[in-house]
Length: 139
Image 1 (spheres, one colour):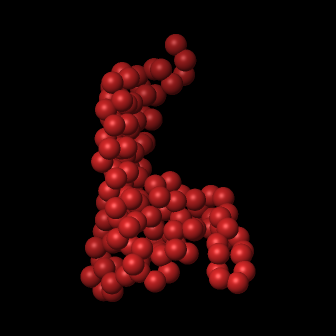
Image 2 (cartoon, one colour):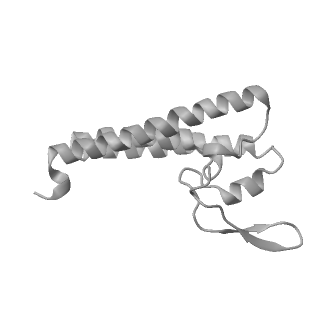
């Protein structure tokens, strides 16, 4: 058996993804709650600096860790159906709703829908085109 196939390494790796998921899911929900309580509009800082849906990312990471622990392919198929059938639809619906806010087009161009955007994207600013990117490490 390979290194990652031992049960203790599998369990440790799965726990690592669980805790990362819990962090993203709950911290982003708390950030959204407290910021929207103070002011309305786009949240462009903190966990929302490089991704528009850190809460969904966290939830998906939690479910991935459960699928890893199962050591079977069926949970991955179910999770894939859930991600593309439920989460993706809700993320796109949320983007449509946020599009009414000023500055959303620029925010969308520098953030990823689910995963942090790493590579620069051309942004049309009217008369000129320029490239922008954000580092993943800036929160």
